Length: 317
Length: 62
Image 1 (cartoon, rainbow over the protein chains, first blue to last red):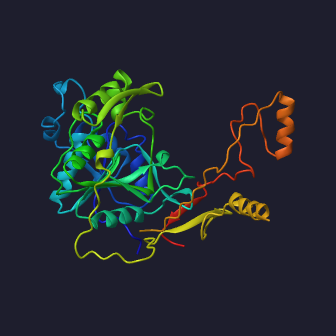
Image 2 (cartoon, helix red, strand yellow):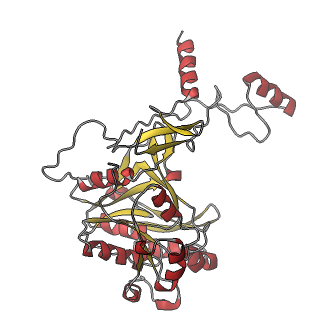
Image 3 (cartoon, chains in turn brown, yellow):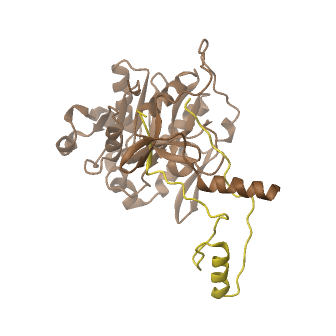
């Protein structure tokens, strides 16, 4: 039996029934999931997606949402309210964790043997779930961004106590909820870390999220197209003045966050949890497309690596 | 956890090679048997193989 995630996955989506990138990615991986959408967009989504996967956001979550400003309903409140709704939806269904994802993730990858390889199975989510569930002080985890894991650098399989973004596995009993119109991921990560909990960001698994402002819908129309990225960065600096500041680089405003105060916090394994030694690939097999057929291979072959080794041997004499 | 083998493939040495003219650049290109143009920012020697991933995948069955 193929291995699949144990916990429910939610895609929070707005105005993206045409692109629906994350939905397409999960469907291709044969992973069941929900889309949390607004009532006014139900018909548009239902035309292209099985209505059984659609969950309509309770407007009370938007009405009661803590935007962390005084602007009320004068502008969009961002995805946080829908994320909180997903959180409670998972609790109501009796789950201990839930996944919540942005709607502009184009695919999921596994970094191994210095290659970022597409993952065509939901087993990667199961592997992240099992790892996270071993520790009693890890309340949020998720895959790193594709572009942030350097392929040729010796990065670790995971790093702890940093920001988890866009694809979050959250422990449902964590005493937090999303807040703010923007940068909710960073804010939630920081509040968890400040409270003494740990986060785990995987490099072994990656998400390819389309860059901000490249896909219509979502926050693009509501925020960035009109006001740029400065208010977004300013809000985070206001939320966490001790750790975040606004900087201008690469022709736009960004935020810089100092995670170093959390570097010494250690993840703590639950009592009684035994981890089997050795590799568990969760039923994932590496395949290469040869002559229009997927063929199992042991590992990616690198011509350059072998030539490099030959060169080293010759140099050594 | 699944297998995770990640080597340090970053360059061990890097040098800046300067050319007086495009002719010299072309001569260098022929010498190292690689395409080197005024737009080339860096090369590997021996020539690097591009790690292609779109013809590979991790799937459920072998």
